[in-house]
Length: 73
Length: 400
Image 1 (tube, each protein chain N blue to C red):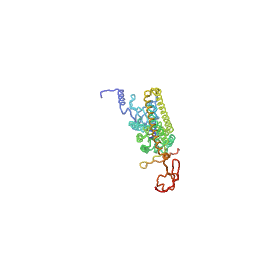
Image 2: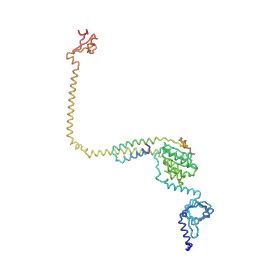
Image 3: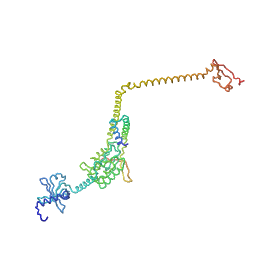
Image 4: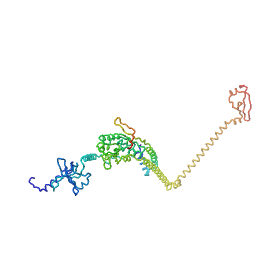
């Protein structure tokens, strides 16, 4: 599940819960799912690996290499 | 019609009407060199256009002349757009100029305008084609000059806003003859990457004012058809390119494009936190409501008067209670009897009770019971235990 999907589902759950139409059992179920999504979202936000790469070459020589941005001059 | 005689004004009126209803002459663009330029005190511009073979008189009225971005003068090559008509009093054919651009650049602009109209008609610039930006791209694609200031600025902003962001850079030429091919290829390669969620297409920045590559038809089409949303950071505020029209989003500078491309991680954390709080609060609210419902039930409904609820069942409950007590008592009696009979059986086995009835137990000198003749034959001494004491005995042999 991507961050997009997780946060969208979480928003839907919170809105449903805040609507107050749910029976208690359904509310509890959604609450538990929501808590799992909160953890998932936080993990996704913290896990980004921060790779800066350059796409080099073309055709069969296509490859990625670490990218060093030029010093500003 | 040779028979009919026209007045001069009749003829000129007819000519004027014919000219003005002609579809070509009513909107025409003419390239030529300005000669005999004269600005009248009224603000109208009078001049002629020539191409060394022919000459035509031209006029540009004050209201139109006010929109000019260039200062016309004799000797300038220009593109004039307007309509052809007849100046009745002088009997002269004139070009009534509505727009004037310098030739050369003007011709290029016209070409560009034509391309823009064509692509627009195809729907390439439609608002409904524009895709929303991802809230958190897994990876940002950057297509720009690998050595310019733009890439430096883009990376700086991306990392500041989202320290863990991953970036894939495709360095390209952004001007010159090879630029469009490289940009199209870069868009194509980035488009094939499933992990790239948004692309920044930026100019190299710096000195160049040459935006031709970003008005190239192939580039514009590649931007429009790229599978990922594209943020264009190409044109100036005043100088919009076709790439800007085709892109999903436009940014005035590379830094601004980077700001569009990724959210601030801090804000995303805040958003998750906010939802977390709302989630917990909504459950508390829901539980409080459930408690209130229960309380209402207790205070208003049958539960508020439990005796009323219980009375009809009271008798039945009493009878059940009695039966239960009776059953327990019966069970206890049965247990008691079982216990006493067990005691009797245990009593029968008690050795002291056996001795009391007149029996004796044969033991060795260590007090261990000797129950068999075979055991006794191997011993010299035995002891006999009676109910009232012990007696030593000697083994003399088998039964006489």
